[in-house]
Image 1 (cartoon, rainbow, N blue to C red):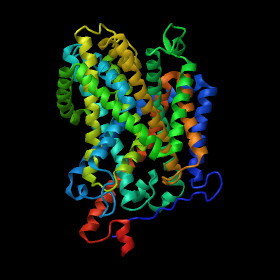
Image 2 (cartoon, rainbow, N blue to C red; image 1 turned 30 degrees about the vertical axis):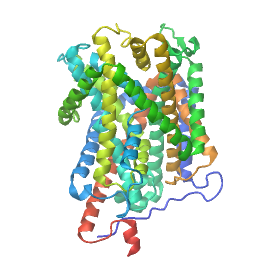
Image 3 (cartoon, rainbow, N blue to C red; image 1 turned 60 degrees about the horizontal axis):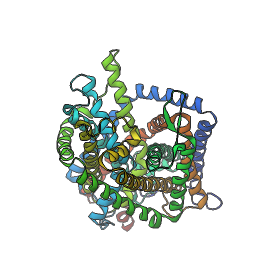
Image 4 (cartoon, one colour; image 1 turned 90 degrees about the horizontal axis):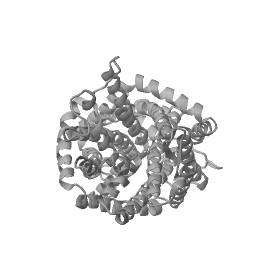
Length: 553
């Protein structure tokens, strides 16, 4: 057997503005993202219409692909963890050991497992599915009743459970395996080395990395878009004034352009300063604040929320979810011409397919993070840790926080105040129901601070990871102009698309951007399977499997 590829040279500039960067990747990614920004800002109506049309085609044509490829990620991760030969392989050389203790590693997994999405959807998603889900559409359960609570959690856990974290884990596993065992660059193209070999040093590899950068920008933009909306809701709750919202022609309230610009200047300004300071200072400091405030808010709901209801929802929800996984992970609903078929297809497109695209678009960002903190761990240890720990944290948040919201509506204490609020405002509305006005204001301030720190850490981490990919996997310090560019670019993508067509415009752009990267991820799954299988055979024959062993021969 031939030894594995342990050298993948990627040409980077030796001098000038792009010193240390793969110029073709960096410039191509900037041009594509810049073109999207100019289009959204200069022709908002046309951009929103075209993106929506493409999105509709993708949802109708590729819904099966998104569902089955996510099932494939779950299958690959669990297979590699379960099989003895693959599970014991180390993400690194044989004498490498984990850089972080189990507690620190789990804490960072926890930090990745909750965030902007948790603060918005831990309340909003269980409430929505409690009112409407495939069971209510098919007439099997009645919406907004006690009998529909378990179905609400089946679908909430489906979207934030094994499939979501398997998507992140497959990227992180591929990157860590090839970067730390074979000393290849920590960039997306390296994960495809067993399939395409040295050809990845050229145009094919450049295309892969550019696709990853664009997907990351759109995935992070979607996350920041939800965060900006909730940030503005929080500012309104704590008394920042009526200028945050405007009324449209139909009399409906929406975020004002001034509020969007203000929020993005605060968030992206702070995140860019943090990114300039580097991981060791800004990001680490903010992450510590995230951890403390997250535990505080969760403890608050455990003490003052509907604790028994939430714990019951957690236990029954996990049980129902695990029983449903084999069937639901492959379920695809198509419009069969009936009212029920159309409703099911619409629901799945708006929720499940949207989530699968979101996780795929976000996977380069989270995957690089998981790879960077997991060097030295075994494949089994990594897969179980990267999937089980953060998914469990998501389940706890959804059950305790969302369960409190459902219980308050069921027992009549909320009287429709929570379900009647907008998605971004439901957490604040729940606090107003539980607490007096003064205490609700204090808690709302704490939530806004936590949300801001999550937004800043997400944005500055994204900027650093985008620049790492653009620099052929070099994790070292980057020149200030490149950090400033991507900080501004994220702000303009979020602001431009929100102004063009609201959060829906970001969603459609993200679904479109995720499609090509979903193919890259599928190839990553095949690639890591091939690499681990061949390394297992090499070990049986006493042949070297890591870069260090090959160099020692």
